[in-house]
Image 1 (cartoon, one colour):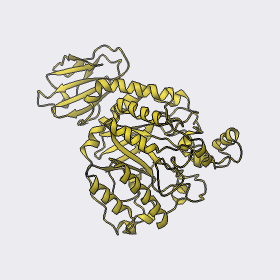
Image 2 (image 1 turned 30 degrees about the vertical axis):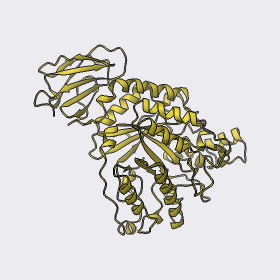
Image 3 (image 1 turned 60 degrees about the horizontal axis):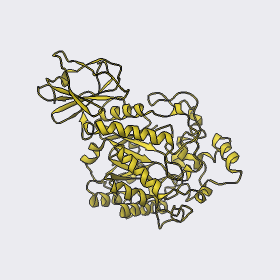
Image 4 (image 1 turned 135 degrees about the vertical axis):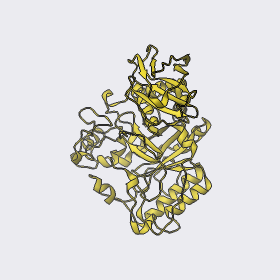
Length: 459
């Protein structure tokens, strides 16, 4: 997976405009946990190829690079993958829906329900999510809000529902921040594109003309005007025709956004020299990153709901908690994705993992929010530790519950500390050599040791 902050589009256009300088707001650095919601026409077939073999973020994808697009594991890419001859998705599509059925025909059967969407948002905020980021328009061009720019929307087709309005209202009512995902430079609905079959195609088979740039800018402006998002999460860059000094250009759009929303924040996927936080998708980050960053992935191997996944493809609740702690200890936020079914509800697996995360966060979330990285994110101690800090404290999360003691590094030595175990608090026994006995395990989920700054060692 390449990193989008390294791509800045036409150099001559980048030199013609001035992009705004923006500081990452504290609310974003403090949030730690957000939820992505990938919902769209692709939720109807709910299918993607399942790679053979084990998968982890620290190991390469087992799918050969030349098959990465014909055997795409992302269900939200169905609108492209079904068009590739001889792809497993093409076979599934024709066997299930019949030869001659077009992807966009799913607009006649995509009917999410408002009550399911509201319940979904409530469950994500209850699980500890401080910001919610729904897809407003994915690469297929189908808009989930009442857009004046196109009739290809959830309001004007069978759904008859402004999906983003429902999610935005529920998010704000639950007290969380609202982000909006938008596919800036890819829109397969507006023109007849060849199917994408390589990373080269990804940037070649897209429109960069000023007319399409105006279209994209009009859509994003609608979203900003209607929903006042705290966060803009763009994807696959921006049309090059909109990177100049024109009135519809991205520089002006972002300047207006920051002026209206001083605590607004953007990601790095715009293809311009300016960006906010960095994104890492299904990627293992080995060390603390100095810049604000966000890890994002699905609970399985896809963002959109994939009914073809196997339990071996999916994170357990403990896996998810371990990932959250690792990301936060390295200075990042975790934007974990859920992929609802076409009616807007979660399947039993996703609902159970979200609920389990919420149970853990109800005990430990307040020890994680508003923290910053420690001098090191881990140590060679037993317990597979992850460290974070906040004023006057170092917090050590114990990820390996089979360990019976831990050994604190020098920066975390203190004379007083408390164990936080599933809502209970007990004094810790801190030896002068940094050895600390770990309470007996009753579950395999991590617990926390809070070390007070009663010596000069804790910063």
